[in-house]
Amino acid sequence: MIAAVHALLGATLARLCDTRTQAALIGGASHALADMLPHRDLDLPEEGFLLAGALTLICTIKGADSREFAGALGAVLPDLENLVGRVRGVPDEKLLLPTHRHLHGPKTRNYLPQLALAGLGLVILFLPDAGREDYPRRGTSSR
Image (cartoon, rainbow, N blue to C red; front, top):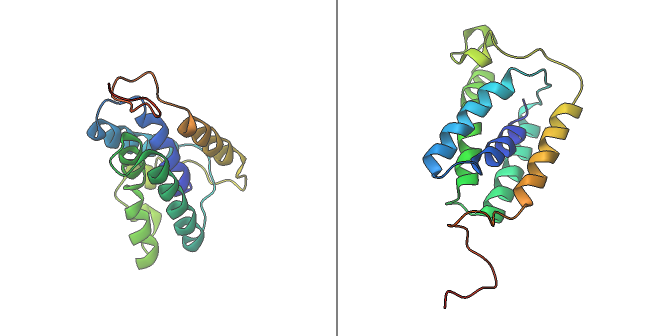
């Protein structure tokens, strides 16, 4: 799965959480589930560029101390294993995480499912979170 898609999915699911810790954990769980779907991976330069863009966007929109950013980080953290494995030439069969090894989804040439997932994540990320008590409402005073 493209790392930026993992980040957007983790940020989206984090909106269901009450704390950043819960968000990071649900992000990690979302990583495992997304890895089991059929997907196409990118080369390292493209992965890094897209991931940096996704994390910057999430941080800019929601803030570095937000549940969404914690969920995004939790969702991409497992891919550090992939990064180290690629750089050191470790075959997938030798990776530690089950979804990077034998539970990994089939490789495909199609990007459309991942793009659809990323697009949905972006739409949800931009939705207001006005239903939560701890959500700061813009344009209102505390008087």
